[in-house]
Image 1 (cartoon, one colour):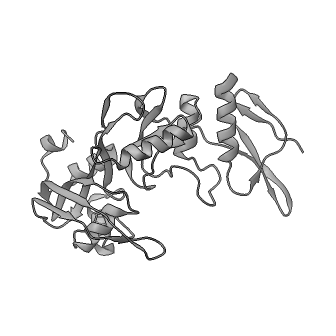
Image 2: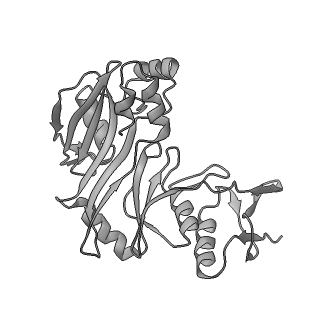
Image 3: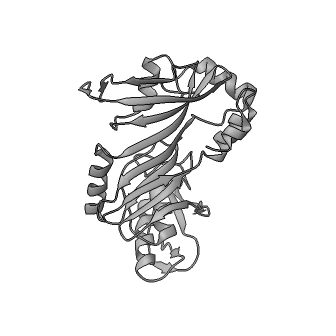
Amino acid sequence: MLLEVVVPVDGAAGAALLRRIVSARPSGVKRAGRATMGVAPTFIRRTGAGVAPMLTMPDPIPLRILHEDDDLVVISKPAGLAVHRSGPSAPGEQFILQLASAQTGRYLHPAHRLDRNTSGILCFATTAAMSRAMQERLRADDTTKTYLVLARGETPERFESDRPLRTDRGEPRPARTSFTRLATGSRCSLLETRIFTGRHHQIRRHLNHLAHHVIGDTTHGKGRINAFFRAEYDLPRMFIHAWRLVIRHPHRDETLVLHDPLAPDLRAFLLRLPDFDPAFIATL
C-alpha cells in the first residue's frame, strides 16, 4: 500500500520540511510511498491486525519568532510541547523543532533545551556548527540567562545556591543559581532567577533544597501546595518562564538582547492571586 505525504511548500524549504515531517511521525506510524507538495501530511497506522484508518496530523501551532538571521532562529516556546522527540510519542503530537523548521522553511538545530512545561526563549541554529558555537556562547561568563519563577514562601530579597547537582550516574557537577525577589503575595515569591550553569532541572532542584519549591513543579515541588493553587486559583502548570537572554552573537560582532514577556497563562494566574499588583504584573 502506498501512502502519499503532502508538503505545503516548494523547493528546498519543502524538502527540509519533509525531512522534519518524516522524523516527527507518531510512534507506531510507518510511512510508505512518495511525497508531494500541497496540504497537510497524512499517515497510515499499521497494526498487527492490518492497516488502521488514516491519521491526519493536526494543523501546526504557530510560533512567535523573537529573532531571526542567517545563523539563528529564536522563538517563544509555548508550554506543553517538547523541543524534540526523545521517545515514544502520541499520535499527532507536535514538537517545537519540527514546528520551527516548518514555519521558517529552514532545517534547524537546537542550541539548548527547555522542559516541556517551561515557556519562553528558545534558540535554534541553522547549521550544526553554529549550534555548537551557540552552545559555547550560552556557557560563557558574559551571557545572562534569566527566568521568572514563582516559589513557595517568602524568600530573602537576594540569595544564591551553589549546591552541586548530581547527574543520572550520580556524579556531582558544579551548579550556581542566583535569585532576586521581585514581589511577594499569597505565601509565594516571584523571583528573577539567573542560572550560571545548565544542569538538569537546576532551578527546580536548587529551590527544592532551599525549601522554596517551584509552584506547580510535580517532580521537585510540593504536591499539596500545587493542589491548593490548582483548586483555588486554576494554576495551569509549573511556573517557570525563560524571560531574558543577553548573549554575544557567535558569528557577528553584536550582542543580542532578547526578551519574551511572561506567558499569558502564567500572567492570568498571577492576576487571579489576591496579593499581586496588576500594574506590576503588566510590566513582566
